[in-house]
Image (cartoon, rainbow, N blue to C red; front, side, top):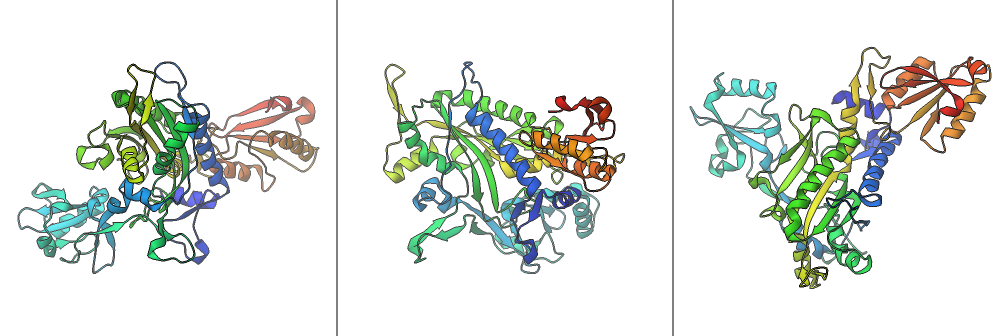
Length: 489
């Protein structure tokens, strides 16, 4: 992971935000190559969900509308959605190290021989260093005598016995306290508590707030979807793992409105469709799985329905385990019911295509993907070590996702090569993201474009006069082929 992060900075994919001022934790900037990669993924999702949506089970294209809702909405919307009251994480602080931990991410390891309790991040419990520390503290190699339980099961009265994750002393952890994850702001110049608003923690609610306008004005019929791509903000207490968990991120979400009787069918349809989509953009193989949420981890809106399934990817920092890439949730009719109650606006759908006609509040199947996490998954999947190359590594993108599609590389400044190369470059640049690169010898230029993941390198040489052709180097295989200039496009 450290090597990938270094490459991302060195080659202009992702930079720490405000780096010249020391950065700001949980925020990242996308550089010239990163924004191209992110936009490729975003535009592909938009095309495949909105402009050319999937074919449904009945053989007809689905009906999905696009919106772009405001980041700041009426704060009552967040009361209705449950975010104001319930969107918080229980946190514990270490009084000695001043570090803060999410209580629901901690596990307690109880030494059943003497009652000692050790707290660890659940993500780190299997790490060798953690096990070594645990054996040393417990004074035993018999890990079978150590019982692992959720940290929430430890009574507050026993906190004095707990040794925290980053200390060897007992009793340094505070009781769990709730921290609201929404960023608070103020609307208007007065900035009083009467003017409080919030940056949206998810893009989904903007879709629900536009549901009535779409139904009334866009000639849609249930089942149909509303899609949105946009930024969301969560005041994560412990942002980590590069851009995987950050405080500002982008989501690609679609809410699929259907009758309750059809929810199970559509839930399975979207699970399978979305997994195939990730495979189509280059995230595939054994690194991609589908995991069903356990009952105790379901969100409030998903309980009692089809539940939630996550499409998970084996990121470098989760290996050999997996981390969430996209969730497909049956939100039931929770959100529309809440907004109907709080706004006093009727959000029922009138269906006159059946007899007798019926009114109902649609249920919702939500495929919600992280665009930022998607970029990280594609980068992780593409990162390939190859000692035979000058750079020792290359990015194996699917060409459709690659930020730069082709590099035009004249070998010398003579024999008319620059003129021929420029003419080809001017032709290609109107159709593909193309670089004209003359800096350094051809080996260094090939190494650079290996690290950029440029699929095709087109080099000009003195042979052009003989066959009116150029040499194309394929990044993935390093194979070279001679192609006529008028066939290169």
